[in-house]
Structure formats: C-alpha cells, structure tokens
Image: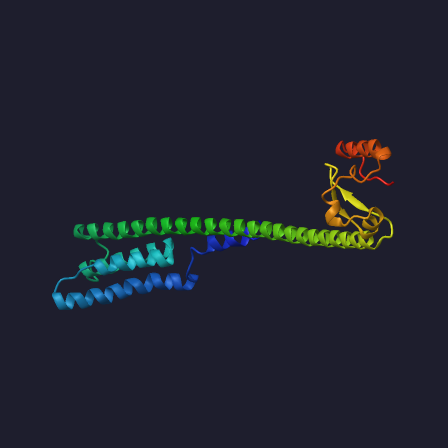
Length: 243
C-alpha cells in the first residue's frame, strides 16, 4: 500500500500535462494563430470563416485545461467582435455575432466535457494498472516464498535421503561383515536374504534359502516355537528374533 500513494498523486497531477505558463500561453497563441489563418482565408476567398477558432478553443481546453480553454474562447469572441465593429462602435453588439459566440461557448463546453472524460478514463486506467502492479508484486512475493519453501524442503529431503542411504550402507556393511548369523524372513516364513555367517551356519546358500522357510531348516523339536515366532511376526507382535 505504500506505493499506492505516490501513484495516486501522480495520477491526479497528470491532468496538468503542461506547465502553468505554457497552458496560459497556449490559450493566447491558439486564438492568435486562428486569427492569422482566418485572415489568410479571408484574403483568398473574400469571406471570413471562424472554423479555425473552434479548433483553437478545443486545443486550448484539451491541452491547457478548463481555465485556458475559457480564456481562449473569450479571446476568440473579442477577435470575432472586432470583425464586425470599428473603433467607434466597438462597445455595441450585433445580433449576427451571437450565434458565433454561442458556438464558441459550445466548443469550449464540449471540449471541457470530453477532456474531463478523458482524464477520468486515464485516471481509472492508471488506478487499475497500479492495483494490477500491486497484485502482481504480492503474487510474486507469495510465489517467491513458496519457491523458497519448496527449495528448503527439497534440500531437507535430500539430506534425509542421504542420511537414509548412509544408514542403509552402514547396516549393509555390518550385515555382510558380521560374524553372527543374520537372516531376513518374510511374513510368509520364506527367507529373503541371509549373510555369509548364517549361510555357513545352516550350510545353505542364499539362493537355496530363498526356496525354504524358517520352519524347513528348524529341527523337529523346535518347529512349534518357529511356527509361533512366524505367527507373531505376521501379527506384528514381533519385529526380530534372536536364537
């Protein structure tokens, strides 16, 4: 939200695209340029046309703002008035001037409405853009945090897997190098694996043991005990057995 304040201020001041001095200068220069163009047209055609003043008023409002636009309209009206009156009767007003005066006022009002609508639209677009940028920044921050969390989880999982592999390697080395007989038996009683000491003790190779159950290599007197032990393994009441 801290970035929204300057952006809003920038949107408000953007309506005044030109410096103050240039806006008021435009309000004076535009009617003057329209006068020059009108005089040139009058010399070529013999009849004056005031269309260039409408353009001057519109440009003054559009680029200079409301105050500059109305000043331009007043100057255009004064220039128009000078076309119909000499110095002696300059203070009087003729009826045929009024439609053109009203047209100047309508031109300034129309330009003011369109300009205000444009400024409102631009401000709305800027506000929408600022909200979108803020939303993108927040979403980017969330994604960055999620990525960092995933990266940390991946590192932690890699460490856990490495520790597990190291533990399995230590157990495998101890299992293979141990002088005590060790064997892995499934819940069905069949041998899964046996170390060298166990193979030597029972005089069976590992491939041969995988085809046998613990009961098969147990002496007849001890078979009931072996059956019970295997049943306890199946019921998860026992996890290891040491003879």
